[in-house]
Length: 357
Image 1 (cartoon, rainbow, N blue to C red):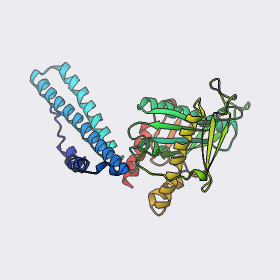
Image 2: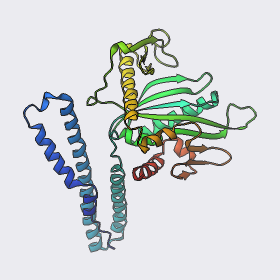
Image 3: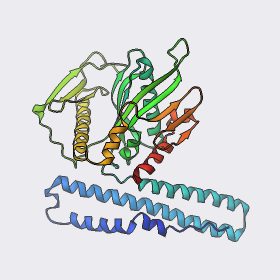
Image 4: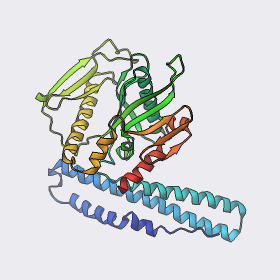
């Protein structure tokens, strides 16, 4: 048995030497007098160093695992122990998975891929049925976030009239949150026997998902306070003692662009205002990016994907079980698993194709 692996090719593939060289150059910049005179530029350089160092650190961990696996293989071959051979098989599989994850992460090299993000879910036409579907998606993403060590924070939610939600806005925090979540942008289609139909007929429902990269301190968004209209109102839905009693909810409107951001998830008006401003900045940043990149095919494709009638994924509960991504043709019959947050196969499949287009 000889399963020894060579990571030198991966070291070249991931440009580890170039990353180390760039880290060295950037660190020299931090030592120059006056480095902190431009706070925004300085923060950007430090973040770039951190991102590159994280990359190198992850590769080094995989490389250490590779060394340990090869030593384990040598020991197993020397001992000719069947039990050790089984353990070697497990270690090799673990190493393959680690390398695969590193390969996948290498695709997340877009301008904003490493940022936190804000996800908004909207129910489509169809009343209660569509609102229920939007809430099902909302729960799916919460579970996906928990499984992948993302912190999920509810910014705003508008409940449906009978059941479900009309819309929900989530802040997703973690490594490459936007890079992963952007794969979910588009229209999601549900086919099932409606629990709200006494005649047990099959219904088709739609919900749209959009994801914005969160604006960090290194990106300046110039907002004139005179251009803002700030409204307060009573929070709706289930919640704490302030709900429907105190005007803690905040809605901010950027008058020149008619861009609206709202938050009602926090107990205090000041906290809701901070989150609403964060969402507003993300929306204005996205608008500016779209202006700058309107001529690029990538942006045009994204716009196409979020139009009604151009669903990216179908979730079929009846007459058979299937979830299919129409962009990659990846599908599974494990509908329950998908609704429990197991959507990485779809995300990875999309990003593999997206990064090559």
